[in-house]
Image (cartoon, rainbow, N blue to C red):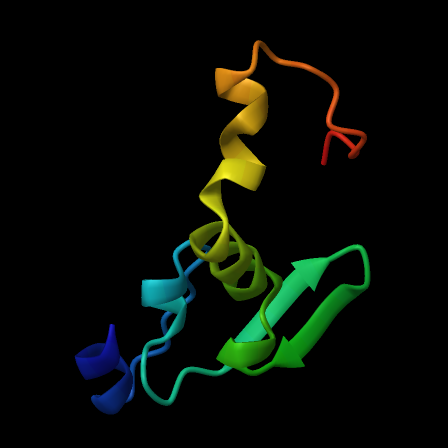
Length: 76
């Protein structure tokens, strides 16, 4: 993608991958409850979610290993 962008091509990529979203010089537009917004990689919700998961995976996975109990969160 980076080389395509450097050659002048336009690439539209919808992803949940923080690695793909980190493509150098990318113009990032995030879509969410707020609508469309231009943002930086560091501010992406998906990056925040991955950081929190990597910091404490058991908080995300406990409902899978504890029998699917209610964690008090929403389903989104």
